[in-house]
Amino acid sequence: MTRPRILLTRRWPQAVEERLAVRYAVTRNNADAPLDSAALIAAIRDHDALCPTVTDRITGEVVAAAGARIIANYGAGFEHIDLAAARATGVAVTNTPDVLTDATANIAMTLILMATRRASEGERELRAGEWTGWRPTHLLGTSVSGKTLGLIGYGRIARATADRSRAFGMRVIYHSRSQVDDMPADSYRASPGALAADADIVSLHAPGGQATRHMVDAAFLNAMRPGAVLVNTARGTLVDEAALAAALTAGTIAAAGLDVYADEPAVAPALLACPNAVLLPHLGSATRETRTAMGMRVADNLDAFFDGREPRDRVA
Image 1 (cartoon, rainbow, N blue to C red):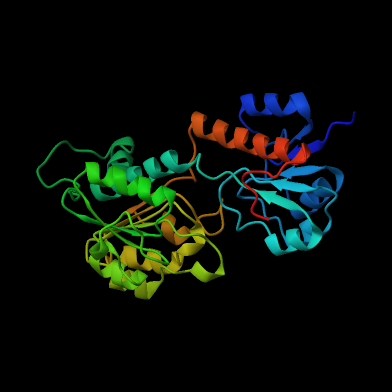
Image 2 (image 1 turned 120 degrees about the vertical axis):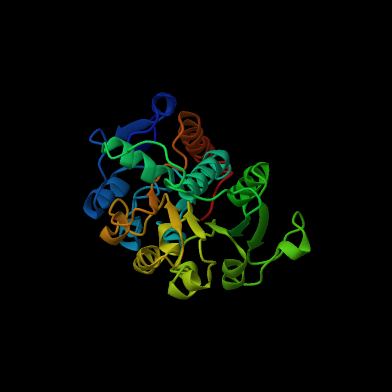
């Protein structure tokens, strides 16, 4: 019996690749470099399943070339896949929700603490040999205890971030499309701008797409409190990066902590020039445990699909 042919657009954790190789004819991208549109078109034409990551642009042109019957995405987000084109061509699409929650919430808290305590500034100073020793006014940051954390979006990762923040003595408010039952009524803010005005730290957890593109713009940043901090572990497109760099440079807000960017892996030079921006290279899910769990979730979806069952994480 011919085994289904699948293509992994990047290298995956070894345990996952080994599991997939038992059942499938696996094509690996041994160079582990991004595939361009032509390579993705060739891949989707010549395989039964395409397994992209969140940095692969699966456009309508790519989907239209499909010989593949399923796009099994390695990642929770799927804004990089043209779902309308997939539906039109009858190609199934799956993602990997749930398994990233704890790791990404931990990175959100890492960025909150690094930004408020100026940790990356201090490390750069030390490594450059510029530290002259302890003194009472050196690199003063701010305590998170007693501060208000504002969450935009209130899904799994936002909830996990809220839980962690409370251990640091923070108060939590949120904005989402509708109020939720597991938060006090007075913690809800009806608009992003209202939340910006009431929060000391704003953490973004909204989905990507045109509806939320540049939701953090100059007006939003101007509405934030003086000394406030912005954190983004969700989607780079949520933030107008030019406006953020201007706000950081002008001191409109105190700091930002970013793990995602609009044009990854490129980062806006204006952001790179801001010493008060903590910049991580999309590490939200980057633990051995989480990345392996993500791959196993893809494998589960593939197994279900090729067994003739409905994949649990089907989004199209």
